[in-house]
Amino acid sequence: MHDTGTGSTAPPSRRTVLTATAGLAAALALAPDPARAAGPDDRRLRALISRMTLEEKVGQLFVMRVYGHSATAPDQADIDANLAEIGVRTAAELIARYRVGGIIYFTWAHNTRTPHQIADLSNGIQRASLAQPRGLPVLIATDQEHGTVTRVGRPATLFPGAMAVGAGGSRADARTLGRISGAELRALGIRQAYAPDADVNVNPANPVIGVRSFGADPGAVAGLVAAEVRGCQESGVAATAKHFPGHGDTAVDSHYGFPVITHSRELWEKLDAVPFRAAVRAGIDAIMTAHIMVPALDASGDPATLSHPILTGILRGELGYDGVVVTDSLGMAGVRQKYGDARVPVLALKAGADQLLNPPSLDLAWNAVRAAVHTGELTEARLDESLLRILRLKAKLGLLDRPFVTGAEVDRTVGTPGHLRTADRIADRTTTLLANRAGLLPLSRRTHRRLLVVGADPASPSGTDGPPTTVLAAALSALGFTATALPTGTAPAPAVIDRAVAAAGDADAVVVGTYNVDAGSPQRTLVTRLAATGTPVVALALRNPYDVAHLPEATACLASYSWTDVELHAAARVLAGRVRPHGKLPVPVNQPDNPTQVLYPLGYGLSY
Image (cartoon, rainbow, N blue to C red; front, side, top):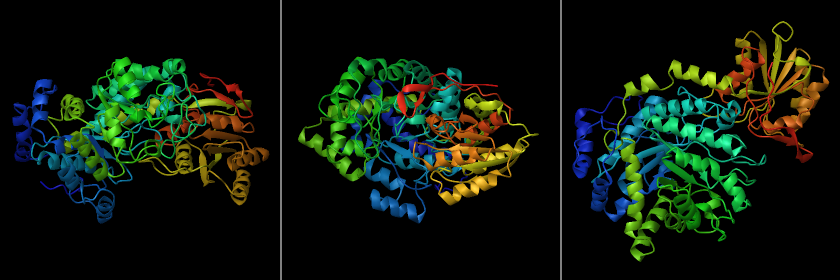
């Protein structure tokens, strides 16, 4: 069977499956039994490790990106990208050359076009790996946090993001989200979710976490993290809590800089550590490291990803965690600034990491680890420790027995009507009403029939129906209003603001989608000018709820915490009075001119 990427997702033939798994089963001294849920015991896994070459062991430690929708026949542009960045043409060549133990899917790498294509790609990757001498199944992962970080889009089920779930406050909802999302990922051949985010977001200026966090209260975050972990892993997919030891109080994005966390050890214990301890108690399969410096935990100045005191001393020793530790992407600036790319993977392993995620140059990183063993800086026994953890996880997930997926699994699991209804019900409990002057909301179809929807149109997360203004206007029109979309962008020019103000004259109310408003934002000018027309203005914060502090002229303010379709449709139902707002702020909103004064406290939220 050839991996054509046509979306057929035909199940592998019996001969294909037996040929691919026979060597593995023989090595493990097991009969291939797809029904077996438990993996082989450590004795058998250690026997398998003992047969591996050093090169095979090194490869198993890496989780790598690869371009293309197919494992063997990607588009020419993806072949060119693979050659330029990795030195191979396809995923199959990547596996044959480096024997990587994991692959990470990205939307921008064209891995996640349609459900059947994703399943075909996963099967092609597994066939390529199992065809190698002593071949092992690949652990395929992706960042499926939902909300602003979503790699597998529609028609898969998309849920509200973490801060929205935090606004809903329901651990049952978090567990349901994890269970359904995990089941759909598993049907696509993706066995590891790089989620949930366990950071406690206490810095409104955090440029990289923000709404990816469940909120600012460590106890509430811990409960939701543990619930999502349990739900995801009940579906047979490994959850991954990130970013240890806690990325919630940074003003620097570790993709582009090197953040420093100034928390004392006591504060870290009370704040950042709480959700990770809860994740460990919940049986978390994997924990992802952060490229941040925490002097109170390690005074060396090293990023946590490369810190033996943090990964081995605290995470392994004090928290008692013995699962897989995966680094955040090794291509990020936060881990590359102090040491060169050849040192980073070696130092990460010495610190206590098991999986090395997405190095900028796989060839350089792979050879650096192998060379470190030859020179004695790393021992083969140290590699074996990580290999055992990785193989335990693959066994637990059933990969050693049943690495393939089928089209039937995709059709009966991904984006089912029941799953979509559940996502809508969860979203309905997250929209947060923060201001409602003169009882403007809910909007009345008698007095507010003509609606103008303006505002920011940030790049849409995967699988949405289009820009937020378009999606929101369509949703309101479907609820009986006559809604017109007029995108104005995140930095509207004066002429654009003038057009919106002119159009407001023909509307009964204006809905403005805002995105990361600050004191000098043209979006603030837009809202002020619209309010001056006398037409009621509703501000909907599409990302950070902190926007509301800068929009006192708005008649009503809501927060949706993201601009995916599921959250925008829920916001439309709240605006129209079809659903009452239930969300409560999971973070405090402070006064912009006096950050020590709270404008809207944690837990605040109106209803009607």
